[in-house]
Image 1 (cartoon, rainbow, N blue to C red):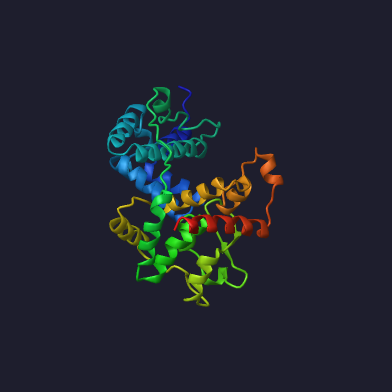
Image 2: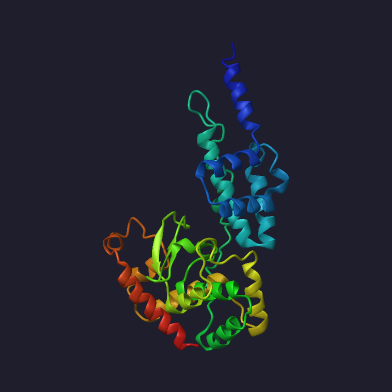
Length: 300
């Protein structure tokens, strides 16, 4: 008599009682994200919304989200921003996943929008740290002094190939061709499989411990080697800084922009028509890799 459909209301009630953890689990499963990404997303949400993980998603109002976002930002603006992006994605996912029979969403509004609307988004500066050219000789000497070969070779690999640290850590010997001096990266960050040139200095080091199967760098704590080099040289750097050193060397040499991007395995945007017409073959990438290798060796 009041125009209320009890079946619809029951469905709405069930949807509004679903927890943040449940929707997050569904979201990462549907998106088929990489394990490291899933772990990072879960950690970011847990850091900022640990007391709301097992509460209904509908309990996260604009007021609640604003408070939690600003609290997390006092400790780490970057982690607060990651949490904001993840929770925003979770609410967008819930908006399309929990609908009534008439197509109405049970989550029509996204409370995370309040942060942008009020101009409260943390501006995270892009990192641009590298190892300076006048520090490279000291850094390289410290790397070579490492007694354990895999960590030593890993740092050299990162510097001379510009790869992301997750890529060599997942590299298998079957994907390293020391005769052709190439290596294959599978299941990369952008979802592609690529074959890239292997610099001579890296190939020489890997030949000494070549195996038929297994991981090329069987390392459980890669950051330990970085910590030791930092202590010995007093040079602050991360694995990703080595990637920037590689890219900077390529640009300093005026190497074709797209060749450097391919060596870094950067995605070419769909809007970049020229980038899709410019498809460098392995020989061209090898020539670019050699130039960068020589440039870096000159600094040592």
